[in-house]
Length: 463
Image 1: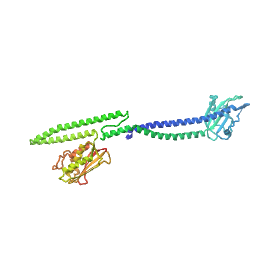
Image 2: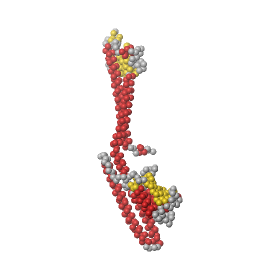
Image 3: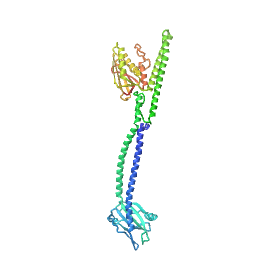
Image 4: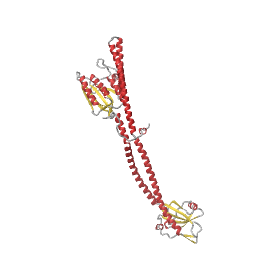
């Protein structure tokens, strides 16, 4: 199963990660290059010291009767044993190795370690120097330089070697790398903050566009009215055009629905009236079928209107205003019965739909409770705990209630469990149809007052 974050990748996250990837990669490459350059500079500085030492050896060495004598150098480090600076004068042997002729006091009783192929490499590059890494008398890391030269009055070549402890160079390189790494980590942290701020600021118009579209969908605005950058202005214009188009489509659907209702209800009413003037089996049959046709027309037209409204622009209806209006009306209607209606709804609770639909849902629910109650009806509307985008309309009465086995039956169109009671038996069915059209449902249960409990799940609009 693909994670939601991979199915719907965030544009902001993508931009941040892309910029961060390039930025961090650039910092890493820069840090590595700077470390290498620093190391090369430090090694070149050591090589230059070794070059000076070798040049002095070559320039001031003397030959007497074929014997090579080293010059009296005054370098104090070369005079101290194992000081870290060494030199040696040697000659190549027949087997490709070197034999020391003279050496610095700092070598004491040891010789400089040379690569096995040093003689061959020097012979291949006459007059040129060779640099290499080796270890010293105390296994310290050394940087060494070797050069083969011919001295006056000597037929065989002479190899001059100089070496210096490179531990200090390695320490300097490590310290530089550590300092550079710390600085670049700080730069990376600042870069992350800068990238996030840049992306958030850069995408702010897009977030504003999203909020405006959401406001239009929830009925808080009719069109997009914000000012956007040139890259988003065409998108905002297209969205406004789409909103206008959808509104026109919904208006046409409502007009067609109204025309169809008028075109069908008038002939059906004429048929019922004519059949009532001619009593008989045929008239009764025509009346029953015409009434069934009228119910079916009302049913399908109601669903068509609700579907058209759901596809159109979101409208907001105050639930408290609707319940207040219904309560005052129904209390006058059921005045002789002495029904007391107690209702409760927050002022900031809004139904995401048309006022007429809310009136029809709540009106049928409360009227049904007033018909079957003894004297008390309780109505409340409350926001959903699990889904803040939904709310519940709960209507309870203190009547006789309804057995569980009969609850599914009363939701059928025209079903009436008591033929002596007034009404057509369509109230609960209408509520169920409209609730389903708005993505909700009607539930029947036992009331705490002793009668029936009716609960309708409906969409909630933002305050």
